[in-house]
Amino acid sequence: MKLLIFNTDLSKISVVSDGLCIRLSYLFANDTIIASNMTSTFINIEAYLDESFLFKLNCLARDFARDEPGKKNDFFEMIEGVKFYNKIKHKDGKAIAMFKHWERSTNELFAMSLQPRLDGAKEFGLSQLYELSKKGEFIFESISNQAFEGNPKGPRRNVNLHEVLLYLLEGYKVEGIADLAKYKVPAHRLDSQVMAVLQDPFLQEKEWNNTNLPVNSHDPRAANNDAIVMEHFMNLPNLVQPSAAILSSIKGAIAAEAATFNTLCNEWIDLSYKDSAAAFQFFKDTILPAKDAFAPHLEANKVLNESVVINEENTGLLEILIGIVPIASVIQFYDGMGALTAETVALFNNKVAEMEKQNFRIPVLVCRERAYEKNKPNDLPIENLGTKKYLDID
Image 1 (cartoon, rainbow, N blue to C red):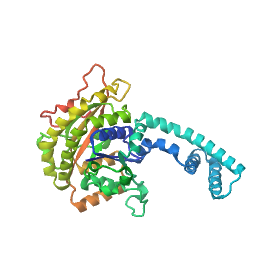
Image 2: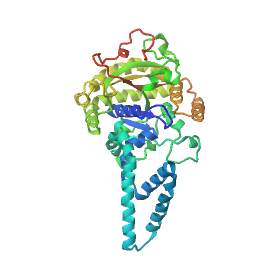
Image 3: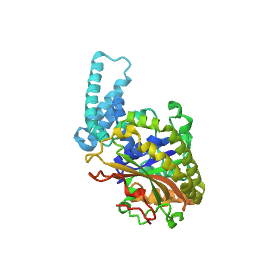
Image 4: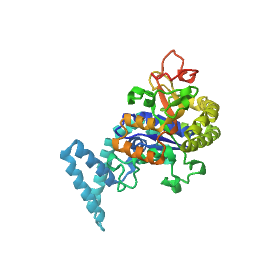
């Protein structure tokens, strides 16, 4: 399965939450789709240091045009100077020396201007994922800005927001992966089945005006197509801290168990594209026992637990939940968090209506952040739902 992490620059969902979802996905999914431009930028921001001289000049010109308009012309003049220099066939020593001086000064200034962003990316736990990005471990969907939503003449490299969200109802076209040939993607990563990983605010109903409280799979209402059904999956320590190397080690250690779980999830997701009732029954009969068998392999991983310091100074613990959610609730969540415009919602709903899937439910994971509480047990109440009618969401 492919796990999808979706967000937009105007959303109230933090890039930190995105990062936690990405790290979780990397650990056991066959593939991770990152459809969040800002988060993608933070992950790959170190690569900007290796960009061309002209790229850096254009970035600086744009920044100064915004922050110090009086200096922007200096950079535009340099840009034209560099373009002229590149056209000269026989360059003399003076011209070469001047160019090298410009290049050195620009590199230094660009590095200084980028440093706060580099520091932020590190603090968010995103820049540490760059090593995985360089190895082609993620699919980065460059989602369109709102101006191009629904416009077939928009930039070809961008994907409209509503089209990304449709992956959850019809799957991912594997041939759309730009780097298949470059990275020689193995067969097990060619899954077309897509499951959403919803960020922490999904279980904070007041954040997005949700009145449809989750129920567990034993609740009589769970079979209804409008019910949000959630079950505890696993508890993990804070995933912000482990390095790319540690994450790779953990992924390797649980690879066999993860492959078995992925295969069952692919079957579940395929069912959800066709028949919500059958998908719900498969969730109860097959996925719940499978997740109980798989979760301990990750929860008890020695490398993971030894790589994280759990105390008051970090974000604490994660509870991962798994369930089946109305597609309408997923869109309401993203919309309520400011990630979508009315135009995107309308385009998506029109497509869903054409597919006659307005009442469909889709498989999801939820990455719930829980604060560390000193002298209190770290197990979370949601895992023992019993006959409770809805989850304790505080």
